[in-house]
Length: 327
Image 1: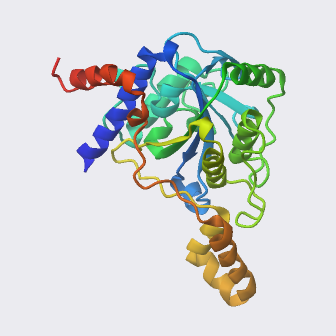
Image 2: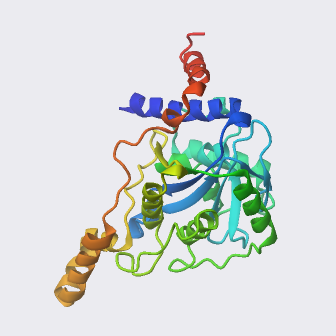
């Protein structure tokens, strides 16, 4: 089983490497990343995290954007809570996933200590202005850890659609001009709200709240559901769904993403007392979920590399052979 997941990781990394080889000729996309919850907070709030990956947008700094140059892979941008007072931050794709800058540095498996070491090394080299060392020269506490090495902690699903140069240039100009001060609020100004604003900038009215199943709160799962609906209505957008697996190892596995009503129904410690004390309200939660909340990522989503255009298959095969020691 471990070897199976290691092969999954390799396919993703090989695909990213092949994308770099062909970046100048590749069409650009914007990808909604639906990320599974993990840890103690994930157990209490299983709605997960949402971020956006841009293949043609890169960064001068984590808070200033520009167009990508040749062989650059773009950035992942998301809203975070209490990271130096910023509303959003941009991190290159490979560090965001694995906390490294080079493909050959991605480990086949990871322990908590391995992930922490890689994250801190990347922070020290690239994020001192945002997450500086402690007075003693140590690693600071805080949520900056969510900026790098996300694939060590959780599985992700990508919902990718194509963009134009004009759309990407307009996004860069707009985001560089707007304020970047945090007003994070879990209910109405969270990571999924940020994704909603970004996707609606590219595709107006594509992503919206679910007033029934999520009681008006924007959730990552609802954002993904909206993108699937948009892709069905607009086949020209070229919607593709893929998986980025969690790196195998001794780090606890992430959990399935839930919506608001779905999470309440699955939590026995909440729904049972609620059903006893307020049966009508509990029943309305169940009806809301059945009517508007049923949505899940595909169980067998292809890896990122399996969606590469056919003309790039040769580069991918070379990378696979080299990794296996056949060249």
